[in-house]
Amino acid sequence: MGIMDGKRGLVVGIANDHSYAYYIAESLLKEGAECLFTHLPGEKMERRCSKAIKQLGVEDPWLVPLDAGSDEDLDKVFDQIKDEFGTIDFLVHSIAFADKDWLKEGHFTATPREVFKQAMDISAYTYMAMANRAAPLMTDGGSLIAMSYYGAEKAVPGYNVMGVAKSALESTTRYLAAELGEKNIRVNTISGGPLRTMSALAVGGFSQILEWVERKAPLRRNVSGQDVGDAAAFLLSDRSSGITGQTIYVDCGYSTIGL
Image: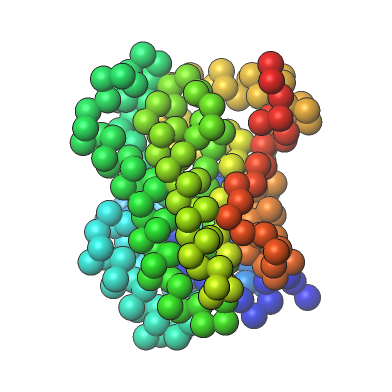
């Protein structure tokens, strides 16, 4: 028996087998969940995503393309889920984007308007957009999670506009939770510690961040993908039925340390 037995949901954000979404899906599958997947448009991204999902032991996955910046694409994906399955129980939002040229120390103040808008759109607005489409499919209630980082709360060198977008994501979580709670839909965010993902490596000085966290975090290590995956499975399960509107830190305790 797993804590996700009988639950079906959508996982958005697997780029490869190092993605947070990959580890979340791994934990969900181990706990008995049925996972549906999306990939970024294009054959290369489909192959990369398919390879990662196959490593999870899913031989014939439900996998469709999604450009989260397109309302038409979002409508198409959720309409297809409704037509084929009727309902879902959970949603994993594990996507973010900011132009890497502006994720460097000393490059925040001059961030162009379009770079700022795109980061906010893909990293924060899409959580609300997906929640709006997922909620009608959660007829018996459900649970949503998104991925954030400590740079939403404190200024982290090189995180720049992504930190602003993650702050918006965490605020979006609270407002979604307030509005969807009457439908028994819970909305949370996990603030995961730094992990070597494709997105993280775009942040200038990322290796130094890893070294610093390992030295200073109470557990004296960096977070693992499994740490976050298991926390996500808990938040998406009925075991966390009283938790909503929260940002849960899964970072080996680093966020509790002042210096």
